[in-house]
Image (cartoon, rainbow, N blue to C red; front, side, top):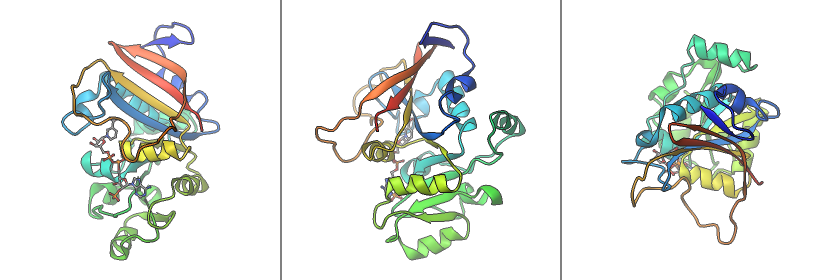
Length: 246
Ligand SMILES: NC(=O)c1ccc[n+]([C@@H]2O[C@H](COP(=O)([O-])OP(=O)(O)OC[C@H]3O[C@@H](n4cnc5c(N)ncnc54)[C@H](OP(=O)(O)O)[C@@H]3O)[C@@H](O)[C@H]2O)c1
């Protein structure tokens, strides 16, 4: 992998690259892959856009996180499971001062999540999956999920995402890696609580019709400014690290 910024450099240690200005003080980092023409999905999933470099960065960002945050749409579509950290991944995490647990936190209004799925039953007792929802949620679904997950209430109908971030931080989960999807990312960015966007740009024209990395309500006259903090390249794919104005 070649570093293009701030100076051209061959062979970058991906963990060291993404650990700088992140391990301390932490923050909310979002990771996406997109084609050059802006598609965030191919045949409804991100798999068709992934490259070897993107997969390595995806894994490294997990290695450097205290929690993986995802919208329920992504959890359902991509079939999210509890994260099973191998001894090798735990060793990498320990080198960076991180714990052997990497819980998933899911944001959901509907609580349409299967309590019998691997997302919940395969999570270790000391790293249970976290479900973040509003107080107006379906109470039967909430009770069923409370048996297998830590349910956090933030807001009433919609999840108050700033309160959700604060609730994770109160648990000591200060390095928050959000893996999407576009609806959750747009809401987080519009709420001004995203610190960093890690965007893999895959050298592909996916063609018309695909979704972008943002979805949902429009932001009239209110775009978010990004600053390029780093850029890597491998096999014509670009790996951008942007700071997001808050
Ligand atoms: N290219 C990439 O890197 C990438 C990354 C991730 C995902 N994706 C793709 O994106 C698609 C899924 O994205 P998506 O936009 O449909 O879903 P999403 O953003 O993952 O999740 C949306 C869901 O999250 C919950 N949610 C979001 N904001 C909320 C709030 N403020 N309060 C309460 N609940 C909230 C709701 O869940 P409920 O419906 O349960 O209420 C909502 O329906 C999939 O096709 C996936 O493959 C691509």
